[in-house]
Figure (cartoon, rainbow, N blue to C red):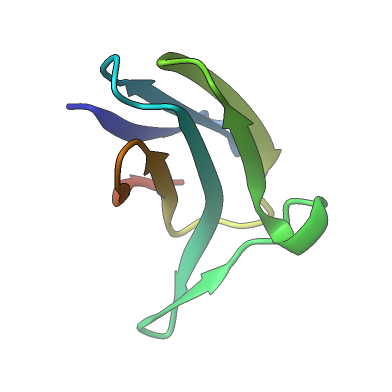
Length: 103
């Protein structure tokens, strides 16, 4: 896939989130906002990752990139990483990808 996110959680509760993008020559810039959520009582609640807005933000003019982030989770449950990509070429394209994992 062109833009994707992958979430893994180890036995100690450390979450690793990897976002990757492989574009084409028409893309002038790309940005991605990534955050973690935990399912609580049927609702997805954003996880405190101790950065601004509890989201990792990355922007580049590169046509391909891979970024990894990590966070320590406070309790067991179902988690997901959400990555919102914005790709700018002759038009602007928005892509959202989600990866789930259980701790």
